[in-house]
Image 1 (cartoon, rainbow, N blue to C red):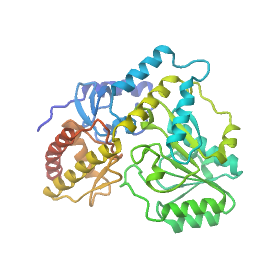
Image 2 (tube, rainbow, N blue to C red; image 1 turned 30 degrees about the vertical axis):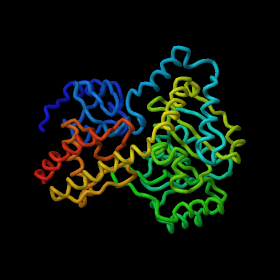
Image 3 (cartoon, rainbow, N blue to C red; image 1 turned 45 degrees about the vertical axis):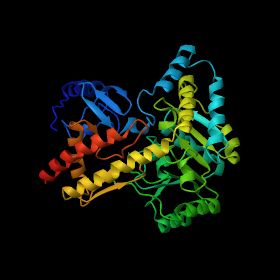
Image 4 (cartoon, rainbow, N blue to C red; image 1 turned 90 degrees about the vertical axis):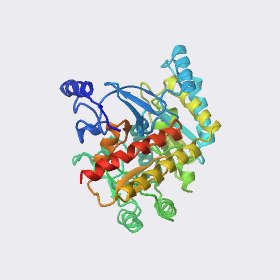
Length: 410
């Protein structure tokens, strides 16, 4: 299976963007930065688990809008509900009944949570959660895992801001290292406002790591003893592990939870949820954003949540992810590679043994993309409800050739 994919229009658009947009494209949205000529920079449409770029190349997509498309691109009933709400009115002078309905739905569905506050992006809600924890406890220090991503705000940015005490008050530990975590609580006793964790560790450029047995029991106990809050950043994993929240999957109980991405199948919305104990503190904040009360995302979210309850979405994603995992491991062996797939079946990431700089990942994923299977070499992948067995089989057929090319490149 040879590819004739070319990215001339994408490249031209990027050149234009570089003149008027800092960096051309934000964040990790363009693997082509690392592997020029192997990835498109711009897309024009999507349907199901397929994407088309501006050069009309078609892909089976395993990024799913970086996790936002849990049902698949252009899911008809969600789009119809969103369009109907748009015609009725999106951003009005105040919230619509849909906002109340969604808050009621989420607090009923997500175990242990009593209230909801809506925003647009994960950064909005993780930052608000940290701020609430600091005000509620009267403390400043926040603990996070090394390499974890909690948004693009100054407090958790990868940039260094030595002049900002906000960044200086963020402490970090090696994920799963409970001795290191205990030492932080001991060294900063009486100063820790919160610990913020993703349900499991999914840093970029590294394998994904599940929590060790007993990890969350210790996190909960340390938080209780210190009087700090336990924040679960469930932006990326939410509803791919449990429809009641990823904390239920891992049998733990956070104080605050942030969710986003898949909550409305691509519509811009995020949510901060919390236990009743922290509702008064949250209510003392001036929480606002011009577009935080727009009705279309609320409508889309309610429809998305309804569909996820009607179909066995988690079972489906686990089955598709399991077929993909076993197939890639088996094909890798045929070409002399030891392959590891880390993370949950619905959120997989593949690495090669003995490939610390991910060079083989870059070769493999770029070859797959040039043959119509969109895979990111440094970021975890996503399975959606739109991925069916024939899509996985086609992906594995393509992987056979990509493994052969990767082996020949060594």
